Image 1 (tube, one colour):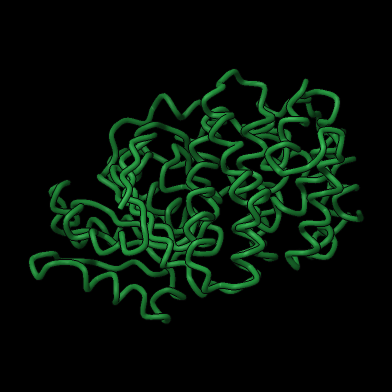
Image 2 (image 1 turned 135 degrees about the vertical axis):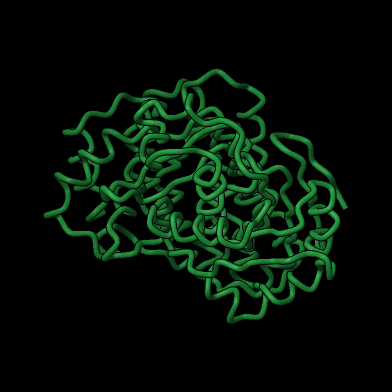
Length: 379
């Protein structure tokens, strides 16, 4: 069993989720709110996790996390937290459950509208200590278990980011066995989410060489060493699952130095609650378009990216990612995902305001985003 101490304390290995009861005791949590989704309840995974808790632990379950968490769902969960007299939170699921849980931890300890705490409105400085939070990911993608961020669709319809060191879970429990048997398409989409985090963190112009090294290691695990394709092709491959969960955790460690235009565009598309688009799939589909756009604005980083992916220094990483997406069975473009050309003006405005735009290697205006959405819709 490995214990990582980068960003937060992370217990990492197959079977790590069995440590949940001990971790709750360490943080003095006796009445946790468990934030999860109906799919994990149906699969019996929530009941299995609850079996690792002692009889003196009174757990309240919120199992209505949407695929893209909303402010309304956060408020519902916060109401349940208060009514049950909870004293901490366990996030159990993919990025949606973890992001929702972070927002709940903030809501139950801070006054006012959640919108006022978003990064784009200067809310980061307003965020103080939040309710104690333990995170247990069941997918290998978002890395939210070790990150400072939470992405929520606000009541105004925008998908916005909450960012604060206070939102980092007190302890992350990373158990790759929880991802064994995950469907191949979800494995592919979440895996490309992790790879996009690593790629955008590497290319971000912010100066943070340690984070770049972590990003490159994640890319090596997922792409050069073939563990992403391995996990997709054989969902029972425990080593591939271990490697991809580590790569996902590394992706979130790395993006402390910022993300970029891929995430700005993805957040814009993900705000559409009628389409209910998967964040990782969006990142995978949009990544080649932004790689083309940023090509001459990253110094030697494309050569470093190619090395991490196992390519020649002069190779075209955008074309490689397009081919990888095809091998993984992911859509070729946003049009295939149901995004329409009529939506481009609204999407471009949303992306321009997104905080990830500010750490894209190449400045990106609204008109730039309009052109980028045109490319991503059709190519």
